[in-house]
Amino acid sequence: MYVIIKASLKYIESGVEYMVKIHLENEDKTKEIGYKLGKLLNENSIICLIGDLGAGKTTLTQSIAKSLQIDDYITSPTFTIVNEYEGRHKLYHFDVYRIGSSDEMYDIGYEEYINSNGVCIIEWANLIEDILPNEYLYIELKYKENSREIMLNPKGEKYEKMVEELIK
Image 1 (tube, helix red, strand yellow):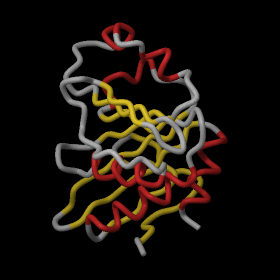
Image 2: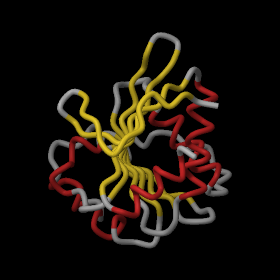
Image 3: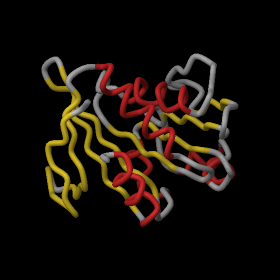
Image 4: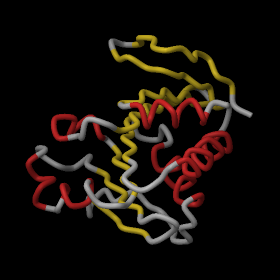
């Protein structure tokens, strides 16, 4: 299993408020927590991912997709901005690393995706914070020497309950 470092109502790290911090000893543990998270997702779920290159954003997304019964190989849509996949729920996988401003998101139909009945995963979500909805699960991944840390910051009651279930 993975090691929960901090789990409290809220704690602050680097000026950001989080609910849970988990140490993931290897990539398999990143996949494990992603798979478990994917089982908890339902229609209209929004996952916002941040973290440096190689921190595990796409690995986490791949395991979420697997638990959503998506058989396609998931890659980061760096140049296409969004990829769509069919599964238990439709998955919209965004990578907004290359956008110049939040306004560009509207050109690709962002509002339709975000308000659909699918699951949206947004890599580099910090670049479009000004247009994120009020409720979502904010996940920060940090690469540590031979391991990773994942910080979970739920925005809204739905996501607070999701995090509570995830760490059981």
